[in-house]
Amino acid sequence: MNKPLTEHLRYGSLNPVPKNESRRTIDTILSHQSCRTFSDQPINEEIKQLLFAAAQSAPSKSNLQQYSFVDVVSPLIRAKLVQMFPSTHWAFDAPMLVFVIGDTHRTQQINLARKHEYRWEQTDAFLNTTVDASLALAFMIAAAEGLGIGTCPISKVRESTDSVASLLELPKGAFPICACALGYPKNQEQKILPRLPQSVVIHRDTYQPLDLKEIDQYDETLNRVFGPPKSRYPEKFGEPEVGTWSDNVARQTAVLERPDFRDTCERLGLFGKQGQQPISD
Ligand SMILES: Cc1cc2nc3c(=O)[nH]c(=O)nc-3n(C[C@H](O)[C@H](O)[C@H](O)COP(=O)(O)O)c2cc1C
Image 1 (spheres, rainbow, N blue to C red):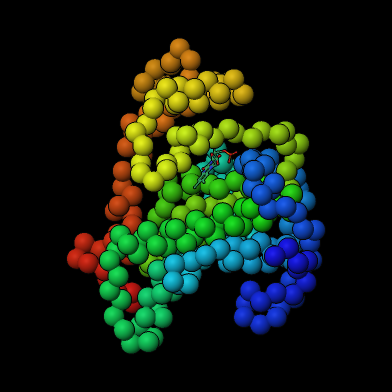
Image 2: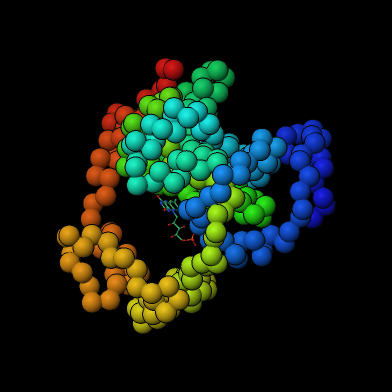
């Protein structure tokens, strides 16, 4: 399993891949923390290739591989992204910036070329591409962090999905799921964010009812480790006495974020009002 990587069958014939120090995968995964400050050290092409190969190593439904990555290197496109999302400039200025694209376009092109009609149920197709793309992103994140590279996925970009799709010239059937900023961390302190206890998330045999006391305990744990979080939507819901994770979950999901998302998906060719529209481009 842990043979040193010098050549690999990932692309179907033995290809050389850049060498790297092997580390224990599980340690890397358990140490995950998002990184939002990067040093200027660039990520070279060899490492990028390695990260994309890791992403493509993720499992994929029926091996359909319905995702693409857009590696944004153009200073012009980066500047436009900073302009569109000024509060997230740190991500668009990162040494490596990748957009994770759910991609039914490629499948539909293959479908046309092989003289079949594309007939997949739209929501199912959307879910399949999103799962494939998310797994690929997760593999890339784990690989990057194993090499000491910090990462942060950015769903902020979905606040302007139409503009992002047009900036990246995405064809019909391809949609941005999120971006991901990558770079070597700058002065990163150890900040592992505790997750919900397994007793809440892992069910044995059948789904167990939620015990809200465990949510209270999780709130306490997070506040003990990191202090109370900044409350979401204070202008709408006021300031709580003490902010908590669960209060923020409730606040965030009590506001209709991205109300036009369904319309956006229709414009991007994912959900047509009269059934799946075959692509013409
Ligand atoms: C799909 C996705 C989108 C995210 N979008 C953003 C974002 O727009 N801005 C941001 O600062 N962090 C973003 N994050 C990072 C999360 O805030 C972070 O993973 C979460 O708070 C847990 O912290 P940790 O990754 O350090 O454990 C995103 C994470 C995921 C998986």
